[in-house]
Image (cartoon, rainbow, N blue to C red; front, side, top):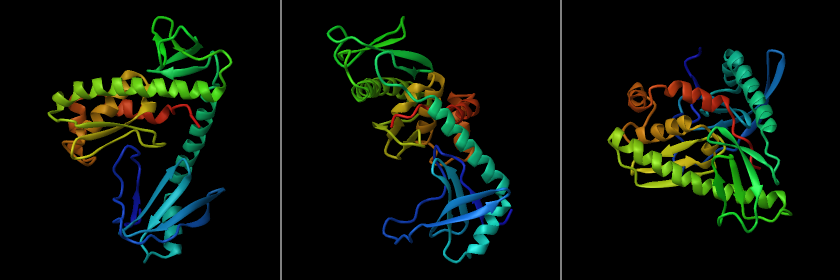
Length: 267
């Protein structure tokens, strides 16, 4: 591998620090390159950095390169990692198909994953508690909506309930893991980020994606412990992972599950 190539793999954090906020940013360039049997479009951004970095995400292939690196060198770096790039693009395509298959048909009887199990939406105007009521034994969410409520109304009511429940659940798990890790969290923010499940700031502020409520509790615990561990080690070094492992020994398998099981789209 050429010495100036760097792969960015960790969607939960890490990667290359962004340029300072005051630094002017060159406009992104749309390019394409044949890799194997495929013509692959990519976005090229010139950045203040020492190496070429590339990521494959929901929007395709993105490349960041220093201003002094020629276009020929960028293309050569991509050719060097063509196998990895094509594999990751294929995984993203498969992930999009999974997401579409998991898309929720909003309305009476809608089914969504909740803590790793299916949850059925029941419209119960006049009978549900204000904002919604979870019936655990029946795996039903009763919403105070009339039976004629439209898909948008049902979706918004479910999201409002799920976000309230996420704050309750995340607060409980933060309070559980913080003493075990010897850290103190100060604030919880709910996030709607597309590819980032959580983040942490040195002052103790924790951000967690409310869509984590689709996943089983063990996965939620992994993400909570991951972000709290950043209050001790603000990188993804071996020392950081040893901190995570001290409270979540099977973190690698849970992280893999989180990547392989996309949450249903809400847009």
